[in-house]
Length: 595
Image (cartoon, rainbow, N blue to C red):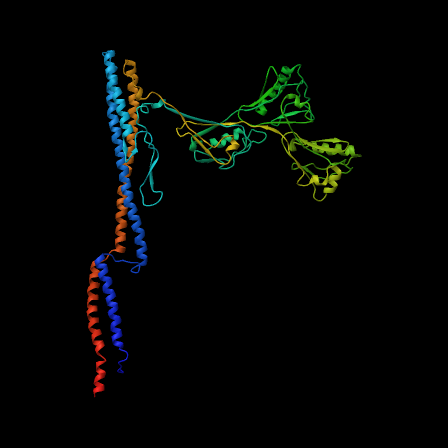
């Protein structure tokens, strides 16, 4: 081994080992002095992160336990107040039984009533003053309060309302009732899915009501059904009001032929011929009678004003009322009713003589079939019209021929859609007198039915009222607003009168009802206390287990760390001694120099 004095490798090695043992000794001293294995993130980064989360949970659980204990204290405070009220009610009942006895004079009963009045005031005092940390408990203002009973968001217990223990709220019994109504107006448009919310629940969509001839998913009947589908959740029911349509006064007495060019349809049901009246009254009577003759099929009944002859139509179940007429409408206007027109398509010109093959012409999805050629334009038109009319029962479309010009019409609410063979469209257009562009997908015509809609009324027997929201409220004819419940109460103990025997008898029943109210509230509070107690027990167990888990990660193992300390102390002493030896090694080189 070479002898050197410029670099003392042995000394450097001893210094490094001594530094390492010093660091280890410092760590042992820190752990033993703090009691913690992890004093900074460098000791155990993952363990530090885990223990920090555990600490958050433990602190949260401990606070939640205190919250639950506060809940127990609050419940006990409320129950204590109810116990005091119970004592007053028991005394009132005792006095009522006493007053019911025939041995009492009116003076005796007046004295008894004086004590009862004082007891009523005491009940009001207790109910008004019972509070926990400033929160009133028995005056009826404590409603749906939440208690945080966990370390995390959403871990709550919600206590429902504590019924008012005031004298005017006790003893109302089964004679109490609540009612809320919200009446809408007639409105157009169906309700989309979730388009309206009722007391927080979404309703919709409104679907076809099965009876309206037109707009069946936006009738009052359909909208009411959408509300009633979730009535179990909302507590709100809907009633479809009768659909009504009132016509104008009769100004002329004209008959309606009831034929293809002069007819009236209500909800797609043909009215037929209507005789002319001799005056406005008989004209109105004739029109109403014609409507009523088909009311079983249409669902619409008619009445008339005996002075003006004005006709009114009513659909009692809330279905829509649809009116469509055929012809020019000149005579139909004499009914005093506004009548829509059916769909119509008129050919572009006179049909040329030519046959149609099967599949050449389709109307509302039905193939007209083969049509033989006519000898001229008129007979050609007659042949085509006859073929179309043979399918009227399926298509709802009738055809008329005027010198070879075909006119298609529909009075029953259906649109008209026509198409020609893609391979023979020009020939089809020529043979029917319909233009080629009338045979494409765009060749449709819609009806212009006059539709009258009814309104709906919302009702609730709950105490919370009706709250509406959503984008489709106007389609139901309603407004976005809160409608409060109207309460109707029976006699409470504040009105107990023991000055008569009969009054005392009634008072016994009223006080018994009040005691039942109090007992119900106390039972609920007792259940809440038990629940809070269970929560406290569970929180304590969870906190204990989490603390033990955190301890195993964070705390120092004193037995192991003491052994490590002893080892590091010995290494420190040995390292110091060896460093001294290493530092003296260069002295041997001097011996060589002296020699």
